[in-house]
Image 1 (tube, rainbow, N blue to C red):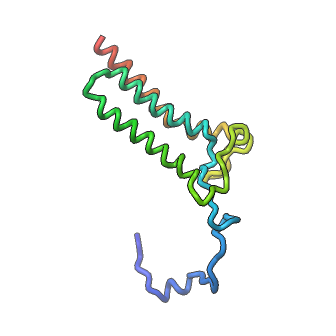
Image 2: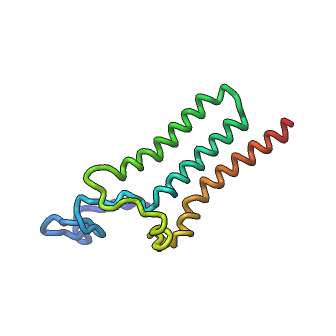
Image 3: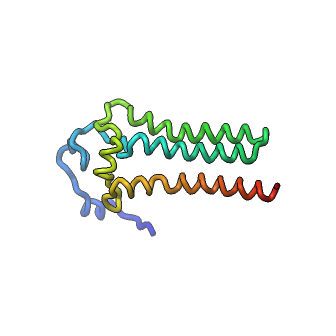
Length: 149
């Protein structure tokens, strides 16, 4: 539950700095931020590819001219949903870091809120949902073909 605090209660617990803080916590250079998500481009592309492959399986499995417009909307949504963050990495001011290379990703892993993950675990964590969605599409189309058959 939320509780209402008055100014005097907040003032007791607030940390007041006499001058503006020059850097944000965990940042060496103010104005430069890491927008790379610490993921290699190949892993990012594979994630997009699995989502688009799912849509391809559904288009082929349920071939009907009436689903062309919804599928086009889904493709545009996926491309935009993954394309905007890809462009975000290249935004100005210059990004302090580039996406990790595959070899560096596998050797160093990534830092998550629950701790550091090695490369294999991080790749599995990133790809498990897109892979399950793709397999779900394959199973759905297989079942529909068996029922129609």
